[in-house]
Image 1 (tube, rainbow, N blue to C red):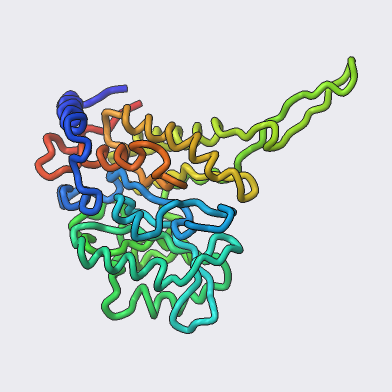
Image 2: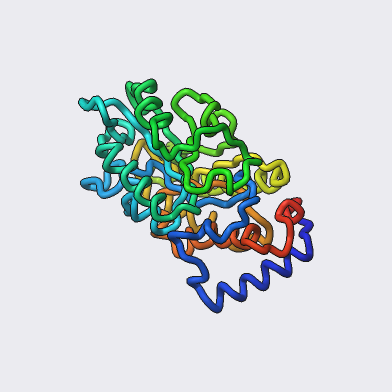
Amino acid sequence: MLLNPVYLLKSILLLLIFVTNANAYDAENWMSGLDGGAKLGQLAVPGTHDSGAYDITANVGETQDWSIAEQLNNGIRFFDIRLANNNSSDDFEVRHGPLTLGSFNNLVMKSVNDFLDLHQNEVIFMSISDEDTLDKQRLESDYIYASGSKFYQGAVNGSTALNTVRGKIVLFNRYNNNTAVGIGWGSLNIQDDYNLDSECKEIPTTPWTTQRVCGPFIGLDYPKKAASVLAHFNQAANAYNNAEFWVNFTSANYYGVYIGNNADWVNPKARDYIKQSLAPVGSIIVMDYPNRTSAMIDSIIENTLNAHASGALVNPAQAAITP
């Protein structure tokens, strides 16, 4: 692949800085160090899948170890929020499929609003989807368009400048794909191959015959999921100069289980790709248990800081890789 030599030099210099000081940025304020003219679609952003599914009994359906507040404080800036109606006229239920996780007000919005009050140079990207019977009209009147709402009130795309949305929540509309506020889910480039394939094995049944047996007890095809993640990174790299949104889910499961196993296998592959890349990744990376993989979040943030820190040595649009 071809690399801009100035960007290569800059990456090496910044790598030396990070090796010398592993805490070269503040995870709570990492976006404050970015050039305000950076395009949203060219940022590498750490995110979480089913962000509210933490601290679940017996870990069934759990996808995270951290609360929303802990995720924010550790650098996560994209949140996958799935909602349904509950018995309240001024709240919703956060869901993961049939699992009820808690109050939208308390579990999500309080943490997000409090965080933005204290970190006004940060931006939060929030995907909201209808998990079951969501009152979309009330969601918009009480939250999205409400007076004092921190949701950014205009449309965005991958070319929108970071300064335009600092201190705001950028809606990724997954509940009706409307693009009037934020951006519709259908306008994104998404990899979300979430169903793990089981592996198969030929088991001898007689001295002359075998039977093909498949299932998680034989094995799950984590390499296939990892390959999907890496292929999507390469596609995003090819299109980097287009400044589009690329959303890459490292998460997957087998009928709702083996979530942690997938994260243990796939997240390190994603981290290694990002750490070894000498060009901007330009993707939102949506993960289960990102804290369980050493330097997972760091690798994403550092990739963005390399390309878009205030006073960057090169225009990142000129530094994209060409596989």
